[in-house]
Length: 263
Image (tube, rainbow, N blue to C red; front, side, top):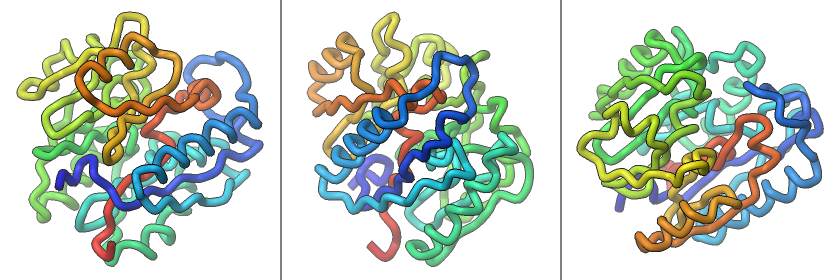
């Protein structure tokens, strides 16, 4: 079974009322808290529908971006690694995630040098792709390489397009051989050797989807890309993402997806 998209567990954190103060590259409006909570509940329902065990952590009002749990850790088969976010206000989110993962993993490591966020990390069956960005630097990537190399993982660092917050803002894994990507990212050649499905022109915001067991969970409102994925015989589930998107959040940001050794 493919470890990069078949999972037994997920962790999510409920958005708090402080999410209205979350970081954003461009101000496109204040998130509607009630709608955000409804979308988040729909997202968890989609994850659970695959048979996965989903842990929903309570909101922590001290961290407006705390619902975007993917940036705080990387979960692999053998171990979990606590990240070191590049945004100073988010460092505490990683510390909060450590005891949660220690209850699930016998081995939890930590990034102690540089900066790296989970939103810049795409794990495939053959390698770990990491996009350098304003939130992830070379020192953080090298620290991660030191941690995962003994377990047989290969890391390849690539360049996130200018003006794009995270590497996975523009891409997501669909299966062992296939990646969904914007053209601006795929044209860099970073996915040579993979099959690439391009999002439709004008629908770049849906490149951040997730393959979770049998489902491709994507943000609602992108009909052309959805039709392309359906035609390629993926089982697609739409989830509203309008409020998370106001905080630069997407489908992958909202969960940690994994199969812990004890599972």
